[in-house]
Image 1: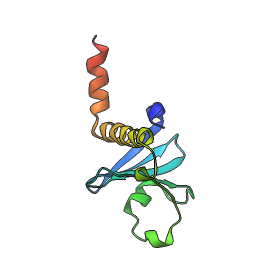
Image 2: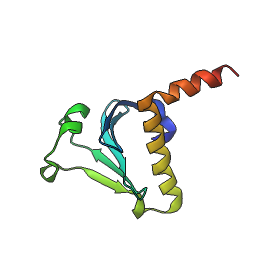
Image 3: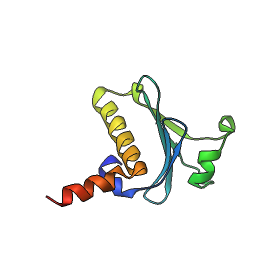
Image 4: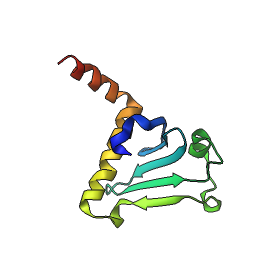
Length: 106
C-alpha cells in the first residue's frame, strides 16, 4: 500500500493521530498511532458506509472490521506501519505535493 501511495485518496484527519482513507478507490481503511508509537491499521471490509460515514461512526462495538497492530509484528514490518502513516499524514496536509514541486525543479 505504501509503495502505491498514488492509490490512497479521500483522506480524513480525525482526532489527534487518526486518519481514514480509501485505497484503490474501493477499500476503506484507517490508521492511527498512540503515545508509544504503536500503530493501528483497520480495514473496514464490509464497504457498507462511505469513508466519511466511517470517520463519524461511534458504535464500534457493533461493527466488524479487521485490525492490524504494529506491536504484533517484527521491526521491519513496524517500519512499514510508520512509513504508511507518514505518507498518509503528508498527503492529507499537502506536503507531498510541495515536495514533488520542489524536487521537480532539480
